[in-house]
Image (tube, rainbow, N blue to C red; front, top):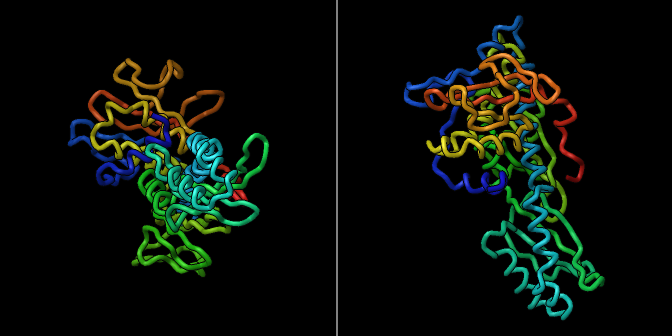
Length: 345
């Protein structure tokens, strides 16, 4: 199953077990997770409260942007756009000039099982002929409808609604997120939603302090909305490197938790999804045996770092069951350039 489809499928599973990226017992005591944050936290010097929150927030924001990019340009998006462009029913309806036929064809596309089109708008000469789907949609993509080389119209399509994006961010990254349009809150996970006038840092919600990063995303069919990603203020004594590592580890552990106790059958899926969300690499070893990942690197430490694919990777690891260890080669601190959503998507 492709990573995006698996992400969507996992959203309908049971409640998320909230796992923090420090040492946590996740298997009833039989095998304790040994997060490699312990190594990093011994590095000299604390990060400070504000810088520490930003270190964590940079990781969350990087992963949130990867989710957004997948909704705009992922393989499943391209496949669904092709379904629209190649729909014989829709093209014939446009060629006939029948608005009713276009409406029927668009309805059939949106509600076709196994496709994941949440809204589709079809236009001809700038006039909307049909618009089917949910009201709150993010990440629209556009295209042209042609038959035998003749342009019949255009379309605006999306595979993700606002609720789905919020769920992906909160359930697979573990970060609170609130969406806003025109400064007004739409939906999200922090209650009450912070006012958008608050560019101040930290943001206080229900007595808890958060750092916040705002992303500008495309709304349907045009315009923008803002996604505010939040990270709680960490202890001032923690090192920046340990906080970055812990944040990446939290992402991996939240993905693992979505398998609801069936992780042993889904290690490859875990590796695929974590790579999609982070750009890092997951290896799973049982003793000297290799369950997931190639033969290189030959040895991965439980803590510290490892050379792989021409660079050095900080390692986060844990034991989901006795004798089995998951090694997550994390990307390290995200570059500042990755923390800005592309203009216009």
